[in-house]
Amino acid sequence: MIRTIQILIDELARFRAHDGGNIAVIFAIVSVPLLMAVGGALDYARAFRARIDMQDALDAATLAVATDPSLRSLGSIRVNQLANNFFAANLGESDLKDISLSASFKTQGGPSVEAVATGDVIPYFGALFGLSRVPINAKSTAVWGSSRLRVALVLDNTGSMDDDRKMSALKTASHNLLDELEDAATVDGDVYVSIVPFATGVNVGSSNYAKTWLRWDLFDEVNGSCSKKNYTTKSSCENARRTWTATSHRNWNGCVTDRDQNYDLDNTAPSTSRSATLFPAEQNESCPAQLAGLSYRWSDLNDVIDAMKPLGATNQAIGLQWGWQSLTQSPFTIPSYDSSYKYKQVIILLTDGLNTQDRWYGDGRNPSSRVDTRQKKLCQNIKDAGIELYTVQVNTGRDPKSTMLEQCASSTDKFFLLTSADQIVTTFESIGSALSGLRLAM
Image 1 (cartoon, one colour):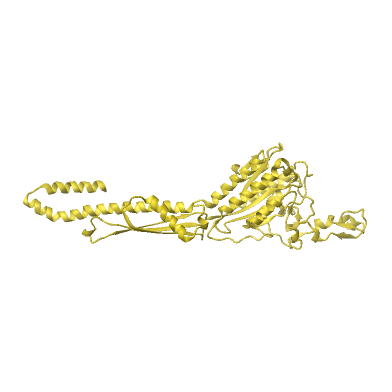
Image 2 (spheres, rainbow, N blue to C red):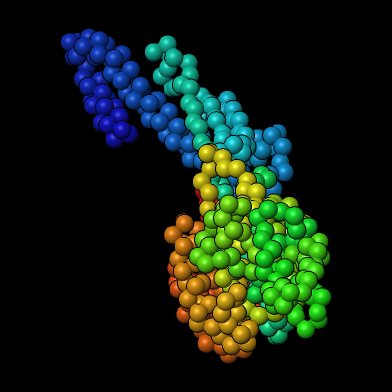
């Protein structure tokens, strides 16, 4: 464009240099439209450049405001001031006059910063066209966080976690992860977290003893007393025509064992019409800390972490099954979904040992391939349901790498084999950063 203008000016100068009468008359006739053409092209080029400068500066300003770590706490006036400051710094020298910019922070459908700028370019040759100014405007939006996260932490609370400072490191790592996930939330509900501590069973809370999603046949079989002390189970007592006095369910410690096969491998809702779907209560002496369903009450979630203590043998599968249940199904209350967002469901399983015992297999001391076999099927079902699965094996005792856990992860980069307690902290930081990045991606 500038090259074209220069050619026109040069030709006009040569044309004007001729001093013949006819040439002078012709020049007088054509000079005005030529001047209008040249001047109009020059002013158009200035306005076009100003429009580009305005858009570039506005895009930079909205992005800078969107990435400000204190954005959530800024009021509308401060957001507007911040956007104007960034805009002015990025615009620099410009032909733009009378610039006005307004910016706002919104949360509906994912957080966004929206900004609109207006201004004018004063044309050099505007009088030839009856034009005193050329209006310029631009709009920019920085959108992020259109994904919402629901994360289940499935955490090993078995006795071996007492070794090599593993439980202490797990608590530190979990607290840090909760902080990171809280920071990733722009508004309440952007991130929900559930926590499922596990050993051979999980603790669903003793206050739930009257819930209809529990079954009591396994509990009643061994918790009580016979009128003849030789008999220690309900069936043996009653077969001997003695009287069995069951322990009150109010005295239950909150622990449950695996559901009947194959409901132990899915997230079917419990139903009183199908007893196999119910969760069997047991009085496990190694009952872990009570689990927590999906929540963004961060202080309550941190209290669950603080309550964890190492006890009992290893049944990763029951922790996984309850982690899946906590994200999707009763007996948990699942928060509603907002169609304005995309949702990502994630389970993070951390364990320091190999599976040793579930409801049917294993002795609680030696690795059980039969427990592993069931867990493989469970992992595949979880992944088939579209849930992203991280697995972390903390191997400070020179156990072999768990091929089952490696295959359980959604991908090879989501399996972590650790050899020290300190690596739990750094690994959770890495996972937390990945999840926060997913949630806050522009």
